[in-house]
Image 1 (cartoon, rainbow, N blue to C red):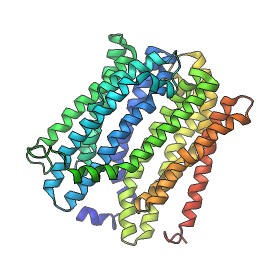
Image 2 (image 1 turned 60 degrees about the vertical axis):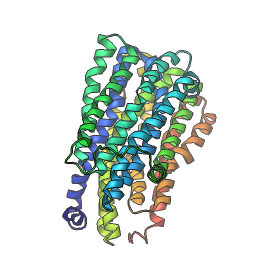
Image 3 (image 1 turned 90 degrees about the vertical axis):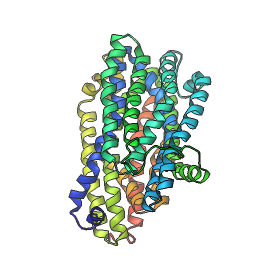
Image 4 (image 1 turned 30 degrees about the horizontal axis):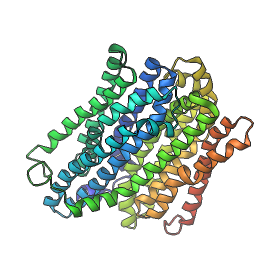
Length: 447
């Protein structure tokens, strides 16, 4: 109760730091999976393998989306039952998460392995990159059950009151991945299969770490008999709650597939590899903003409910300021040091030269992306789900897809049209966020 009441009384900047820092650390550590694999694969396996990883990523994200369908919904449901002091149902959620993840991940694994090559070709693979993408995704799919359980248990740990333990599990997985990658890729000469195996094994160790917490007899939510049978009410509610992030993740993957195919049509495998490098750099900083958003959410929500709109808006303004500062780093890196950034991933001169200009184009609007992301999260925090979903989908679906298909027709070099579609959609999305925010100013007491 004391911690909850502090949300309405303690200095907002102190609260934001207190709530956001663990989330930022965890989100940044998670994004390092992509960076570590890309750096080692780019240097150890070549530019084509790096392009293959870019093709495989949306497939991995779709697999993860099914995990979020279970994990996000179940973690919210666990928090509800704990708040209601219904500890029997809370423990059933834990058992049901394990069983649902095993069932769903097994189905995804079987379907993915049967139609692996056609799926990868549809996602933008060429005959030259297909073998690399196939080798990588085959290992990832075999480890899909571990991946789903890892993300599911991490979400439950946060809801069960162990955000630091959840963060530690993530960091442990990242460190092990960093250690195993060079051993498998270079030492054992396993190439992209070694990178995938390192990812799966690191998550396996994290799962063991997580399970130890749920075997602790002193824990309120823990493993014991009677929690494993699927409960229709729990499964239906968990899947219903998790449907929103699932649909968003699927929409994001669909956008990446379209961009990959446009890049393949107009620029070939090197263009896809360039996009992969740029995407991984911007993704790290976007994850930091997501951590800031997670820190802002309870502060804004509590104070909006308590009718302390000045504190709610203060948390919003501070988060916008910090998010803009984070994206300013990306802006400077992309505009001033694109060659240096690219060389972190590859020594291929052709790929380096073809990445510099696109990086400058895409990073030109980085300063306004943070504001757009934080504005969407503000409406999530205060329960305005419709506006939040609208703002979260505007850039990815409403603007970027049409622009990526239409803008290549406006340029002598159609590839430039694909690159420019990204910052143009960012600009329009930011303008849309301003309009929605101003339209809501009376309800938010911004006048």
